[in-house]
View (cartoon, rainbow, N blue to C red):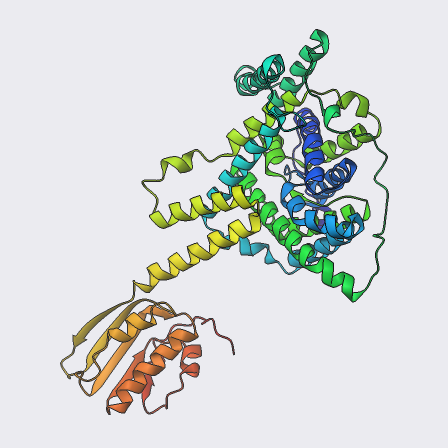
Length: 508
């Protein structure tokens, strides 16, 4: 029973003032982001705002990482934009629901542990790419609706307010932490614009956020196999992108807070949130690294900040739209630029000369794919594949064989390093079959047979000795390796007493 009472981790200490003020700041920052991502997907602003509310509320309550913020994201928007254009919003809602089911399945199957396979250079590249995307996305605020750059007094006012926001966010924490610096900056810029009557762009100039409680709505489309064939590819990509971005964000917040989140629990929460988002007229989403960093930098560590941010966003939509629409975009632009600067791993630039060239290549490549393709899943996948290939290549070169002949004329090969698909060729080159004595011992005490390629390599070398009438003894092989060796018992002699017990990755 105690296990279920602790399910939501509400027993942790909560600084209510910090959590509430940080949640209010996050809610203000969520508004323009949600609207922008909805526009990217070709949907109405309320579709993005509803998704931000549902995603933020559900993941804050059920998620595996207190303090992390979820909502409508650009990663999901760029996936569903073509679906929305071709088939309409109802197919988007159905896709989001199906993506949620896939994410919940991944969580129940405990696939979150696969994030251990993501190397640190990939995470560096991912974070740096997101920082560049966040920064570049703010450049549109320096343009008019026609795409022309601001000029004259309009530019100077906007730029001045942006710089003021950044200075306050940077400098206020050095003086006091009574109020989150980002919220203080927004309120200060809002007051200056209001009392001095400055003519600058506000949230209301982008779109109206007035609406009602998210309406429950079962997607209106034919429930047929043809429909499933249309939405499943999009749902699979949304689920994959959402999980990758969420779990990587979870790892980043873990490092900042020096605590450990629960990846599988977060995957189930993300899936639940996307299912409800699709059923309550939202476009779906995942964890948001920008808003999560705003929240953690304000000192929020509990679930309350995310819950309060989601509830305040709903209040803005239902009751406070007229006030929130007057918030200057300059304040939010300055806030997001500071988030981008804080997100970028500047330390990674200092390690260029100290890191292996392969790691630098992976980091830069992941950053470029993230920035130019906006495909986070592809960027991470490319980074993991290249890192795995480099790792395999490096380990393939580490296979060694120490050779000696004892007093009885028996030649010993002491193998060092892992024997797997990448090192089998070098392994085979270590033996001088024709010139070796009549009896040979191959000792695997300092080596491991990792896969079927290794088993086959051992098989082949024993077969080569058999063909020339020489006897081979294999030492320190585990029982599962021995069972898989196809040679006859009179050819291979295994030292059972000294054999360790370990498993080989094989497909029986």
